[in-house]
Picture 1: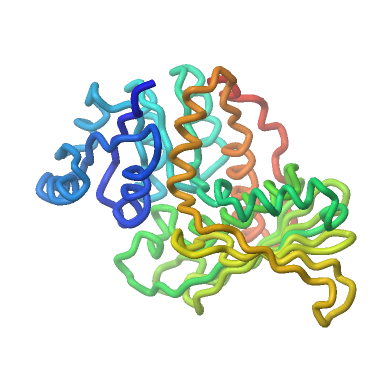
Picture 2: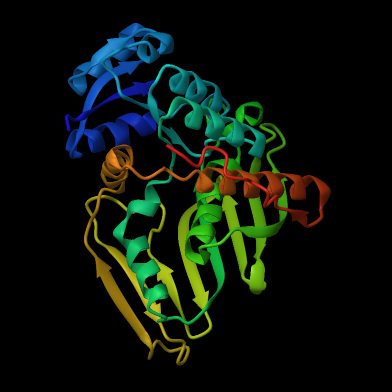
Length: 342
């Protein structure tokens, strides 16, 4: 199988800092072209990565020498450009959150099924061996039955020009980083949440949620607790609690690719660390691992499930409603199997 030829929609920071270097290193991948509405900017970035340049998104989507589109555009452009890419016969790896509503997510899944193309929401975290090891320890029964997931994700960004601080285009903490907590809970519970609650503090100028605390309830009593902030100190922590112990993931969302990760396994024997074991996980570029997993998904004869796209969108939508209503909101479980075929 020849390498997949990737086209990059925009010269976004995440593309330049993370995804493009990862694609250079990934097996089965080559960077074909980079598009920007500013051709000169596209040419500058393309030259750095040995790619061709396009002066419009449409030109990239129409490029017959591109197999896969990577979409790191602002949140409100994820669905429109993903739909256009699918209509052009391209596979799509779209940055999170892929959709700002469940209806949008369903629309993408239906379009992917109709086009016979793979579309994946880019949660690179799922491809880090730290997460795989934690999931394996759970499967081995090392912490008993999972009862809770606690997630903290915070950074400080007060730039009014940054897309994360623009409410009208899907900015704010819940959509930008709260989605990681939701995806983590779904991953470690291996189930869909049933209801959500949420409270937000919004920036008086930006209108975006700068501090959000949320909860989700799973069948059998399991719970997710999340806190995400966009104007606080840099912090990341993920704890998976069980009936017989717990796991703590070090730098669970943005573990540097050149640093080993650490996973704490604690039996809960006491509060002094007597039952604590610290496991070292080899340094991994999770963006490279994500790209290589995407290659395998395309090559696989098995249908590519869409349940993660739909599940994440349903939970985000419920938390958004809960923040407005002040009530627990039902998470629609009738996602169906829209697009559950490749």
